Image (cartoon, rainbow, N blue to C red):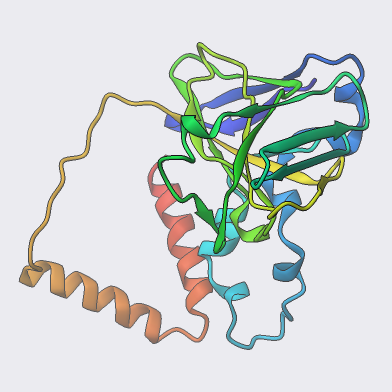
Length: 246
């Protein structure tokens, strides 16, 4: 599979490799890992771009949607768990792929795991056919696709040092309340955001604002309030910061 590039420190390009362990999987377009910007939720894209106030004009949303890479589900899957009896099963569209189950003694007996307002009942584990390889010093943050607001299942977050460990078998919190849950091939499944580990630590500062702080906050706030397009001004500041940082 082709390398996917990410921006590293000092403006140098590092590479993250998604490597398939199944012959031909890397040639199936709907199964290929892709930049997260290709999986922006439909509800967000459907918001009218008519200039009215909405989250579509908040820079934090498109900035977040452009972070990292999404692995789509690689096979049609069905999972079910009956909390009353402990019955569970999984089905897949291709026998090359498998799921297993984490005993609730490992986690869910000790916590109410609630996501999007729904309690999780059990944790499945997907045996993922993709490996991730990053350069020395790089790890990945594994995240659910939060803004897709899935009410039935969610991949659990974590950090993997993919410069020394390449398996990424995802833990899936099942909150389907006994229903058979389908995860379709090509459906956005999990988000990975690469980051460079660094020895530099930030000291924690907690204080009441000084006169210098107040002046800075006030000037920045007024700069935005006096602009006809505050979000455009925000982008301008981002571009200037990036240019000055070169």
